[in-house]
Length: 372
Image (tube, rainbow, N blue to C red; front, side, top):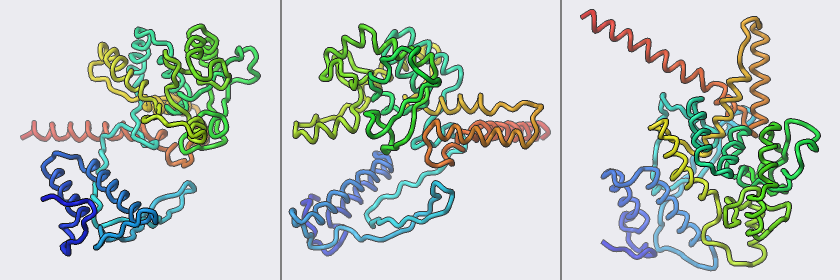
């Protein structure tokens, strides 16, 4: 059966395009031809399209019968101060639900996305693989993320001007680099008043690269050339790996035609998939990671060293150390909600608790079976 996209004349709602498309998606889910989340996203896009057509007065789209039925639902959540709140959202009867079930064995941390901290063994294998690949730019990108916890967008929008001074001229260590709107360095959701913190060793490596012949050669092929506001990391052809929001807005304001696809770190991710992961797998055959996992790795490395408990400390001293570590990590990782920081502090205990419980219960069952 074929329907025109704008034909809502049918009295039976299931013969209207929106309901008909929803039925098609449900059938694909049941046949395991489509993931529920993918179907949910596709249906949401269709609703968004029709909603735009109906609300934009220039288009004047008015379907003969309702494409769906709206209803308001309340979603309970906890705000950044710890109080329970209820947000009212609008949903439709054509929306597709994709319920999630938490995995007790999930070894990820929820930090805006599911991030997996790399083990010490994995970190060593990754750094060794990067050295063998001898890609200095990619190596430095990884080190910035590992040593500072910066997100991909922040790492790839660092500017030359912030690393041209030799370390002897930097007044205070660790080096604090302001990021966010007005700096040219992107932050998630344009968060302001935050600083990227890095030690002297990392800064000296970035400075050495910024003034190197390789970096100068790449800048000479770029539009900004030796402008101090140029990106620190550029491709061999002088193109940024990631265009900051400010640069994209400037380009849009000039009226110049925009590229079909923005530079959003894809080149780095492609190199990771095609070169870095295969190289690490020569040592660790099942190794897998995403660049964003390095953020979680930084967080867990910091927690593991900051929360070491001296046996001579009392309960109050240990609690004070824990709270201090919690607040410091929250600031270092720019967490708005301290609950996100708690995910890092509780990660080791959660994983170890599950492993201990599983091992203990398994031993109990084996003993019971052997006694039969």
